[in-house]
Figure 1 (cartoon, rainbow, N blue to C red):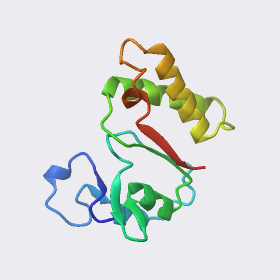
Figure 2: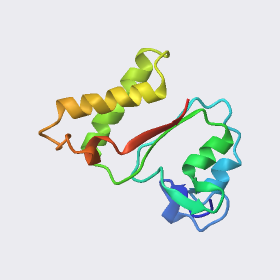
Figure 3: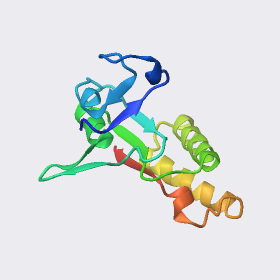
Figure 4: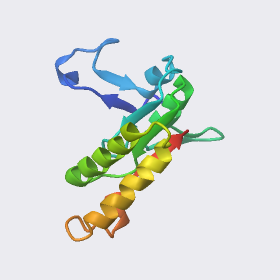
Length: 138
């Protein structure tokens, strides 16, 4: 899990140490996030990781699960910024409208909306545009 992580704003300005602006998957896994209902990582390829023998995929997905996060949304490949903005806007609107909708259902609904409303604009009929985001957990 050492090779996976999140680079935060200002990371280049820091000289290292525990507050270096880089949040490794190992650091995430050591956090107590048991009260965290949802984490969204809408940057490119945040759902990827290294495959470890008899361990599965080691990366941010596993790190957030180990930390106690209930639900996680992440992407599996490079995504179009504008399409992702629309997808995430729709996803958040669904989640905020009613707490009863699950993360998976809200993501599916947002993907279907993007597929239907932007077929011409983003080539939304192509899964590469609307299907990069996945949900893990509740």
